Length: 534
Image (tube, rainbow, N blue to C red; front, top):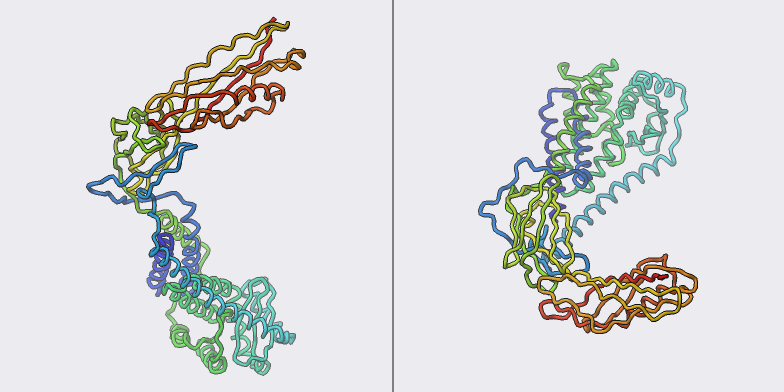
């Protein structure tokens, strides 16, 4: 829900700025206003993916006066039981009511997208059906006129003219293969009307108005609930028609003659509506278009490449900060607590904080808490270590107020055994096995004590072959002190050595490992060395 609100707010801001800019440019040319609206559409759509990839930016962070620590968010070391951390999260868990609200909002949005999407697809399908039964215009007078106007407009794409049986449709559509759909009565038009119509329709093709309007209709379908996108689509259509009118007038057609021809065409084609095509004589825009084309003081200049480049730079300067902006918190003390897997606090834990350049050190007090000086938003690395526990290494980011209070859970560390199995190259009594190395476990842990030791037997085949080796093993000591599983950690060990080492370790027995007087499982690494002596 928060993400949806953020996307709507960002896109609405970009569209609002574009519409405001168009109003401020009301005394400039329609081509410039249409270009501004087109870039606004591109910017509004681009804000959505840019939000996901751009880094955080917050020029005015929100400082929380009287900052108080919320409940901690627990971080567990690898292998630890997952703690419960309802607070301090980026977003609290959604309850039944909030989940139902999100589902309702998603259903309403999807229904609107489906409805308006079907309308758009139906319009395109209808135009395709009309064109499928159309008759291609092959007259020399039409062809020569199209070639002449295409040369004036520097239009290199071939344009197809088609006579259709629909008497109220006069429109242009298509991008790579643009088509001009002419009503059946166009066969009887005078040369003046033919020139006016073709100059206007080819102006749409030259400017790429069809693809811009189609993109606006798709964006409006996705944001159907936002009135700003409806206003954007309406303004794009109106400004594109007026910009094409300016091109027709710039081609030498007198304004009164053009206005009279346009009025007559509007009477004939006023009943057709479709979002899939650009209509020449749309009744709702005629009054403003007549006023503009009959005003000799109107700016009719097309937008230059230099103006387009400047507008694109301004668009980037607007969209990047909007997409990267995130509300956040200013500097505040970073604090938290360290626990073991049973939930008890751990005093004396060494905590190290690194931000890439600076390093801070802290030690947990008797209540297991630590605190660092005020830190600003950013990416940090924290390490926590205590003898007898696994070292915790975590990289995190400070964004929201709850991130400044953290909790960490340390898991019980591994114990290790090193056993050296030796044998003489001649038959001799078994060599005594050295005592296991002491295990350093501190805090609230009682170290496991070995109750039964079985020495591995040197494999006779390996001894006869004069081969030696070291077998690394990982074993799990259960809560009852027995060895539950043994796993060989290297694939380059001869199977005879691996079998002999694993068989011996499985017979070992220990006193239970106690964490706060509660038996827990513990991982153990064993290195058994098989060597021969002369």
